Amino acid sequence: MQAEALNGAGHLAWLQGDPARATELLEASLTLQRAVGHTQHLAYTLNNLGLVALDQGDFTRATSLLTESLELRRQAGDEWGVALSLNNLGYAALLEGDLASAESLSAESASRFRDLDNSWGTALALTNLGRSLLESHEHARSADVLGECLTLSQGLGEKVFIAECLEGLAGLAAAETQIGRAACLWGAAEALREMIQAPLSSAERSHYERHLREAQGQMDPETFDRAWAEGRAMTLDQAIQYAL
Figure 1 (tube, rainbow, N blue to C red):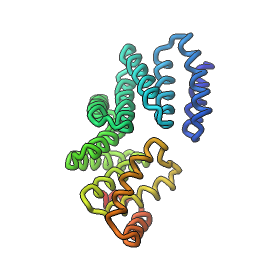
Figure 2: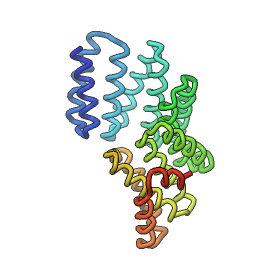
Figure 3: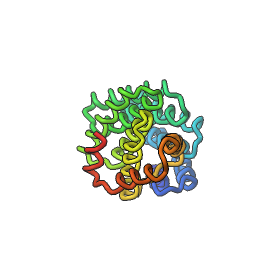
């Protein structure tokens, strides 16, 4: 019970933006979990520690922790956990720039979640798959995946996923020199993140800012800012309709 309580408190600290405290609590939980040897709880704690390490930019440690979590979930026959771990490893690969692995892992995760008839997990994996395809310049496939993800996320009411899809589609629009459309979608995503109090993680920000800088260099600042403001003024339904 103590190990599970520490794990829960560590996860909460991470969500509240305190990675140092999260790491302290999760590592304490991990020590207890290893002593007890409860495979599923150990896998969960390893997964949480991996996500915290990922947010801090420690890709090597994150990948090691997430891989160990995946292997334990395979051993336990935890199909949902396997699908989730594959997604998280795909996300780590995306942030690290290993696009081939990111695409492969995210696609396998999405396929497994579909087999489980788990719409939430499917949307989660499709978000990462769509962004991986965008980074690989596979624009048509990225548009299809992000569009499907956005529709699915809207039905689920998952606003964080919606924001990520809007940002992905903004990056896609920018890559296709539709700068006004990109600015509008980024503005809508920014407003949504502010509304739900879900800022970009530090690990994601470098990708976001790179796409943003490239787009801003292709349009005069006043026009860009006006399109951004138009996006911010949209309702959520309007932003989704515009994106699709």
